[in-house]
Length: 404
Image (cartoon, rainbow, N blue to C red; front, side):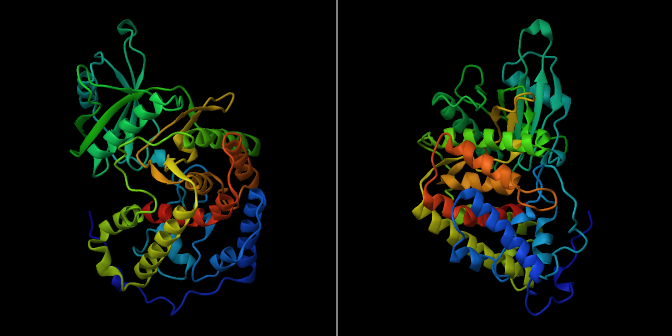
């Protein structure tokens, strides 16, 4: 692989970020006003300040309900009139998370892992929706075995063992609490364990768990038209309301949203490709990025102190929910690696960032309204939560853009 270019060789940026044109500012203000109309609360002074060019991370850069926008850091840089940190990598392409293969497992390794879980031999593996921290397979078995299909979920992140164990712990806890949208976790025969170490076909270390397979389709794949988009958004809102009524596991070993490390984990993993991230802080874009990191942390701390908190899914994008293809009702919530504790409204903010904008970047007000109405069918939002939702969206949008 070619070495990354020296980002300090980039042309110097303009002395200060250019002001938005009047039409651009009007468009953004219209989107925020539309969001507040959906929320039923007036825009306040804090929102007007957030619209100023020196502070804003534009809301619609998570512009697709199908997945994250590629090279979002480059988009952020261009939005502020700065060069992207790596020339030539910032594009306007949209990438679906399922298209991003962090790893694959060879057939023989899948067979070995299945056997370790006490499953029959001769399984057939089909790759399912994946993401940035895991790869998933549907395992089907010979009819004579009597074994129904299962899902093999493989954590491929740096702390794969901890990630897999936390997910298994949370899923078992929620199943015990009666949350039916969480697939059951398969335990190893004769033990209380639920994970098996494995090796990807590129030689990387990974950790696998086996969970119940649920028939359904990712919600983002059936949300193309406005009616279907509103229906799946309502289903997601209802599912989150039920989740938020449950207590977190007693020993959830995860950072909370208001912890400094929560934001830093996302921001500084981006810098890993450049070595010591802090050593690049004098580059205009990296400096801009780190300044917004502090703003993001202070925003989350402030809102966490004022808003009701509890267990969060942490990543309720539409592709992390399976729905029935006919009824569009929720079948399962998947991918619990980002679960944590924090303001309950943060999950809603994440859902809007991940699925509330069209590919052109327009806020889909009917979809946002359906999400909130679905949520409030199970849990009423307080005035403070509604008023803080846009700020939580800003914080989550910053984290998602930097991370992905």
